[in-house]
Amino acid sequence: GALEKALREAEEEKVQLNSQLAAQVEKVAALNASIVELKIEAAQGQVVSDSLKNVAHQLIAGPDLATACAEVASLAEYRSELEMKPAELTMRLRAKIGDMQVRLQVEEHTNVRLKAQITRMNARAAADTEAKIDGPNLELTQEVQRLERTRLAEEITRLEKKLVEEAAARSTLQTELDHARDRLLEMHAAQARAEEAKARRENEEREEKETLQQQLASVTKSAEDSESVLSLINPCGTKDGTHDHMVAFWNRLSETGEAIDPGEARAMRDQMERYEQVNQLYRQQLDGMQQEAAATAQRFDMERAVFIELVNSARAQVAALQEHEARAAKQTAALEQTTRQVEAQGTALAKALSAEPNIDAEAAKLVASLKEAQCPQCGKLLRDPHTLEKCSHTFCKTCILPVVLDSMRCPVCESTAYRRELHPSIPMRVLTDQLHCMMADH
Image (cartoon, rainbow, N blue to C red):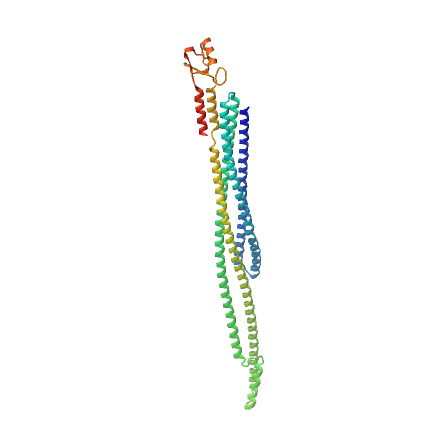
């Protein structure tokens, strides 16, 4: 009854160990789920970065100002989304790191508790074994021994399976960490490409500004040339200059008294009308050129303001992305450190489990020792043991002496046995020494 009670207690201890190992497996699964969430959030950040890059390329190759304004509005939406993403991602990462730290502390306490339970279990088994061996009524059957060995083998197999699953989970976690590191490198490369595109946009903006300045200078020069031509045609500088010139011409003729040829006067009048038409034409062209120059300057100012705002927005987004990447790098380092700590805890747990004594071998030694200390004739512990010289079988003196005197044969092997061949022996001392050695090994 005491042995069955000890076996039940040992089985309960093993059930508790199994439940604790299952809890650790669940914690590893939770860590894997956290890594998957981090991977999804990093992928979302990559999608936003790719969208910003596409918008920048479209702005570079945009055909007109309307498309540029539409892309600027889209870029503003992406910027607001990107500004919200790092804060959410940082909060989630901080929460996950805190959870992992709490889980790590719980696992440390669990490992300490497991080691203490294993130590108590070994001490209790040793004490029970010593008490059972010293007791007078120890009865072990082969069926109980077989069941105990089977149960111990199943427990060892289950523990090995749990260790293999934990190793696979750690391998999966390391693989996902490597993937996250690769994605961070890709994000850095995308940032470098974005900076290169920004430099290219600045060069194009500078070239366009120089082109507009050249066009404005050309228009200004054309206007100045037109004014010089008008000044040559119309010295008076007014629309009525032709009429004043004709009046002055007729006054000069009247004062000198010269004869006026009607044909010459008509030709002079026609020529002055043509000059007046040319003057009006050049003035119209000058007004159109001045209006075009003003519109071009206004359009240049608008485009310049739009591009300056776009460049400032891109710089702010790049700075936010760099800050986000720095935070992600720190959080990745913290996550890797936590993973290493979890791996160290798993290794320590595996060592603690592997250091558990081989109960099957100890039970076999115990059974062999008990068989040696058991009388084959009466099935009880040897009392005043005596050994037959020829076959070396040991019996209680009260059990073997009548048999030898009656049949002169060994009850075990049926070999001849005589009274003079029966000698006292001390196998219990050997058993006691073996038990002390077993306790010292524990």
